[in-house]
Image 1 (cartoon, rainbow, N blue to C red):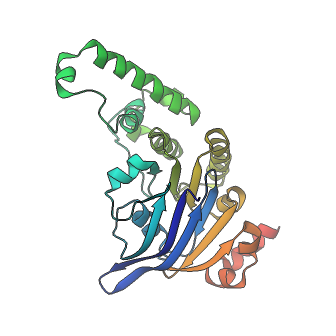
Image 2 (image 1 turned 135 degrees about the vertical axis):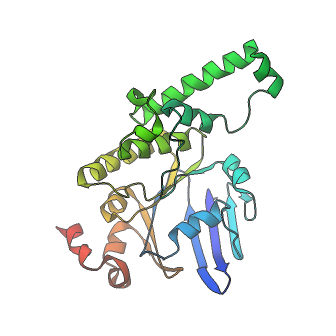
Length: 259
């Protein structure tokens, strides 16, 4: 059974059909790419799966359970975590505190214990802090633990957002354009980081990315959307040589993948 099975999904905003009959399958441990021109429906697909927008038709089954129509927080608790095109951190909180929020998405103690600062509350706080530091170490930014999130370099903020996402202990991680705004060196560093993270965690990962070299190097399986519909699906080699994909999206950039 697939970890995530999306079938014939459609999303409509008034008279506009943002997604039309889109299907997607992700198995445990997969690294899947989702590409296409601006406005193709990629982020809308993420938003529909994670409950941010309502799907007007189709099915979404995660880990054997239908999650269509569930609230985003309930879907997150099922084991789906994500990042966003625009980084969403708490800039005036410290780096470790941002990760602790991911760990403490469910309250571990009640209000009375918090007010009284009980031994149990103090113990749980220590454990949360230790776990947060381990996640920061895992993504290679432990040295920034006491910095304020808003003061971090852009690439480090991206890693912090991913650290907070994996702190929720998901079964699948959705990454929405993690290389956006990065230069060539930063993009190469991101590729190496995501490859190592996938190997270490075994997480299923779905990646939206306009930097095609990131997708082609990391993803085993790629789905291409165009104008809200599926244009193609296949391996990186198949996608690079698909005439419809080249015409609609890759275009002249195709040459660099064959250099």
